[in-house]
Image (cartoon, rainbow, N blue to C red; front, side, top):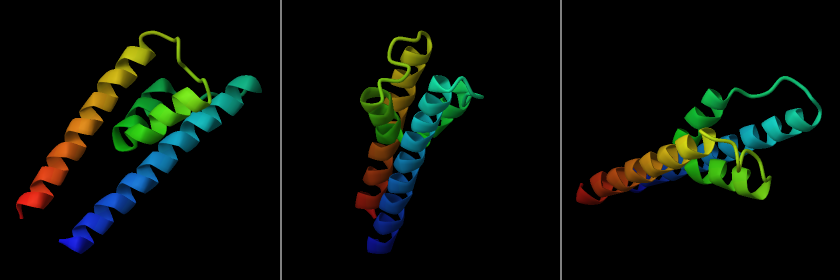
Length: 94
């Protein structure tokens, strides 16, 4: 059980770092008028690393006012939290 928890936490850490990195990359590209990261990619990344996506949005002040992206991100973050809670419940019931 401990190894499963370690794998899950490592996966979450990598997912969150990747999500934050994608938001950072999109912010840099936006400032430099480069090719942007598609919103769909940012939302999928948020499903894997919700906290990283939220931190990327808030700390980098990126896509905080754009609708409907903001609403979609809120929905994806809610789903992400529910998936984490369900996963923890499964691990704890073993």
